[in-house]
Image (cartoon, rainbow, N blue to C red; front, side, top):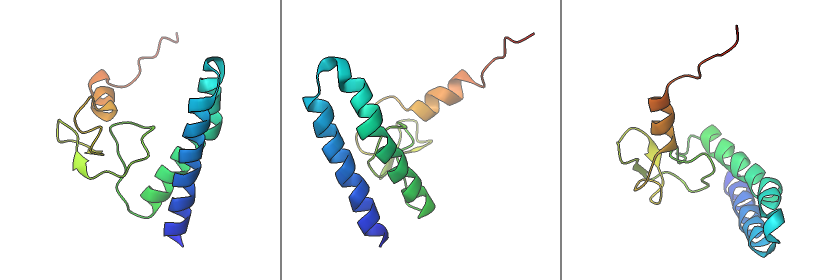
Length: 101
């Protein structure tokens, strides 16, 4: 059952990316937010709930994690293991600083 649900989300992401590719330049961002991003987040959530590894190097990645990031700190997919890791970057920047009085 879970495999069917994962396959469903993966298919929705694939179709959404095709729609983004074909969308006018001015609508690409909105199309991505509507047709791709929600399904990526649902797929990532489902994988985490099932105890499956997700790429932590990029929050918008829908690939399963199979290696570690370059720093060796976070799970990453093959693509994001070679580049910058968003999780490492957020750790380096520290917590947000409040400017409220």
